[in-house]
Image (cartoon, rainbow, N blue to C red; front, side, top):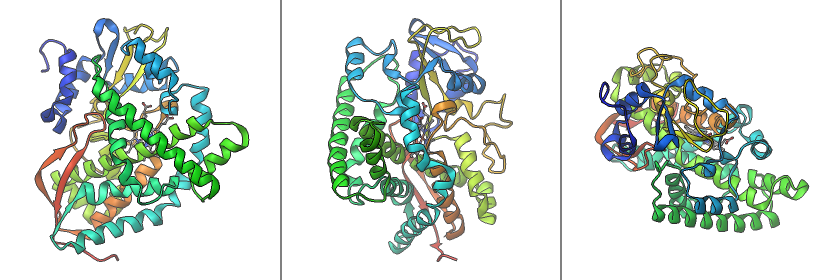
Length: 412
Ligand code: HEM
């Protein structure tokens, strides 16, 4: 790789190879060294260095309106313009208006009030694993997935039995946010479109129910905002709910699983956490740098944007390899070493600038509580290799990961 010809489109596409998904970091290191590099006659520019990505994420000339890219065929662009997009894919002023409506529910102070509930759900899930009596935990389905799904569903006011209905839609929408590198798969697009419609119908029904029977949840608050001052339309309300649910479903699961995987593969670090479970928050931060659940994101260049010697044309896609930035040796010493005492919080795992992850305090809290509970209570943890990965190379993480143990200790 390194020292050979510069990377090309086929190398980027190989990020989707199952063998690469299990460990994309050597490939990402090569892309970072070659960064920035342009493909498709300049319509796609790839960035992997920390400094470049950090700057682009904060630059208003780097748009989040991904449908406007030159790589999207005009007929799909026209379709996309008719759809109401979530604020993830909007620029100011619409982005600012919509984000502000939900931001209050996700501040660190408000999120901290959820700690007792997150702890209770974690304990219930561990108790269920202990009760099964087989001394093993399939970490993804028994803890890492149900914990964040339950919490975001409760926060929004989604009935507890419903997440099973929309797990498939959520995975399809998550798959559709992967870059296509210029080649659009019509079947995949149709799948995502259908999932979006079904999610829309689901929320239309739920909004109707909440209107007649208000609750103490975020959905009821958003409905009131809509009723009160036309600050968001029904379609914007639905798009916001879908964004929060999908983000709550497809990301924190990867953070908890990636953290446990790194700890189990680095026994010294696992022992340090077991000796001092309060290091859980530091282990979460180091995982976000070392093996982030969101590997990349994109922006679309507006005129006048220059990065170093590169002047991407209007409409060019800027592919930002967030996972490569966490191991940039210009910023992090010994970047390939997992060290929970490193204290590096300046990673870009939650992006930066106006679209900085709204759910970061919630994801951090959920993952810290889960890791601390495991460190305190799961005695003799071991990893049953091999670990199976999801096919998604962007929202990347284990699909199936068995942790063996001697016993789960009762709560202190
Ligand atoms: C470890 C878990 C998570 C990671 C790594 C993560 C990562 C990210 C990243 C990288 C972005 C920026 C995307 C971009 O601008 O291109 C983002 C945005 C966002 N995230 Fe998260 N996220 C996580 C968990 C969550 C959770 C639990 C929620 C749910 C509440 C959430 C809600 C959002 C929202 C609403 C945005 C859009 C913000 C905006 O456009 O202003 N995230 N996240």
